[in-house]
Image (cartoon, rainbow, N blue to C red; front, side, top):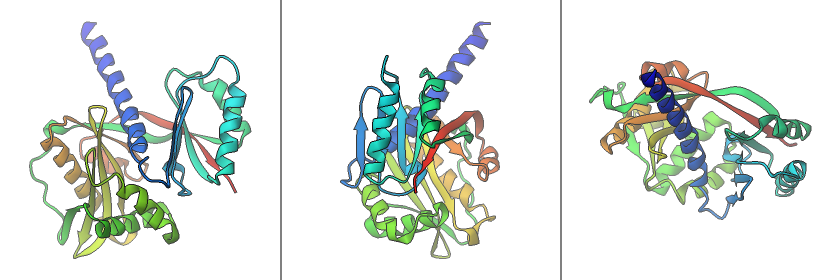
Length: 272
């Protein structure tokens, strides 16, 4: 019984670390003047000016004894006032979700249950060397020009219009050249084709923004750039890698040794 309880405790700690890493990733992008970071006892948010659900994050950390409706109404009014058109809203563990849910649904948010699978892998068991697909090289993004190429590839995959790439590049440039970030660009025969990002926080190594342009898919490039980031985390002493897997990437991550530890459910808002 003690072993079972210990195992449950470790799983709960890992699930908490997965969510903490994900939230901290967003909060570390606040340095740009194009980004609004607000932290208060009940709601914390990061707004970037990019019309993408996951570049605008609201986290409900607790509820006041009275005035929940006013809290949400004032926040939504602010988001409309500054022309936020897409955002995701996360309710933390321990917050009475049904109390928040009814108000969010009334404001037009939709609940996406099991939006992504929360996964983790043991980095101590990674292979020391993994051969890259023919013609593939992986660069560390550490200057403006390489970041612009990274942003363009990621924009293609996330549906961000080219006119917004400079905004994205601006707030990333303020943060991602130094730890806790490490950012990767894959070149296939010299052409930028894939992206990934490592974020070190909450005692785990988070992998984010793994993308590959449609013309280069099916060659193991996504797996290769993910593995490159995990091997770097391993060298820095991290024992656990985490990520939130989409449906399309789930099988790839399972093949790399990731296991399921829960589902990420969020409310999504689209305005106009």
